[in-house]
Length: 404
Image: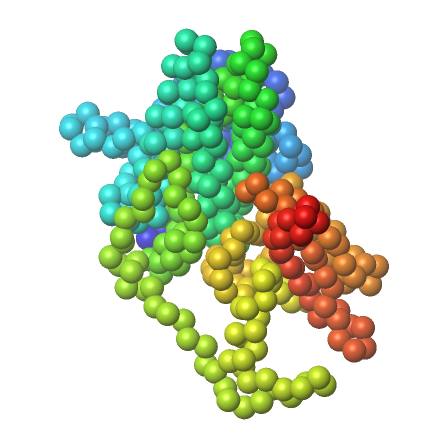
């Protein structure tokens, strides 16, 4: 199975695609650029599009510019990716592939319960909700229930952000989705939240809502034509097993109940710690390894430990508001955050390492609850930096206590 690796160089076609993207970035009209593009290219690979965007970033194009034009870039290639042409050909001979499923991913999408099958089904349901929203706009009836249903896209986006983007970037050095699409996901989710809370239904609100629906629809296209095919081409079966297992921690969205993937279930085994009955002796007393693990899992906090090389080393067990996929263990912590958060996390850890800070509390609302996320520097008795601990605490109990 072929793998796409940015280190392998850049093809002539990728270089030409990059030139077309530069023209768009400089403000030339989509119609003009697309007219020339269609003359030169009969078809392109999804991977070449991603590499071209990555080269733009490497050559100094600001990330914000690439993100801003992400939807325009997508529109340039509509109908021209090789995978789309294969899908359209198969459809013409009666082999239906909904939403122009990419040939590279079609085999996996056809497997009941496979993560790509679930992702694709979620997108099909999302498209129906988008269509329903547009129908409601025509008659001037956008109700709150429909908006809340649409907001479930945040679950779909969270799964991509936790399970697909970082792995594609870290393991296979395909950074385009993580650098660009992830930020667009966050923008769509945040804008939808604002619109849902201020549903005036006036002309200005409708215009913003229609623009958001278009962006969400474009993201469906980009997932099917760029993200999913590249994951299918690169991820091993073992890695898909890990994604399947980690995805069980997420709630359903759009009423899609993840089917049982038989091969994936074979890998679902209870992980057993190699417990030692020997005592772990510390200044304040002693524990067995089994006792330490049980105690950490009993503490009403989500605990993460990142070592001094910025690698995720430990998550305690139990249900989590902030998902911690097991595949992230051994991965650099920064890859687990979208671009707009990554720089903030880097800054905090750099301050910890330099000894300028010891603790950073962050209060936020999550799923309607008040949460306290605390980052703490972990140091030894000689004040040497050993790593960073992240603690997540549900503070609703405090609100209830002080309200009495």
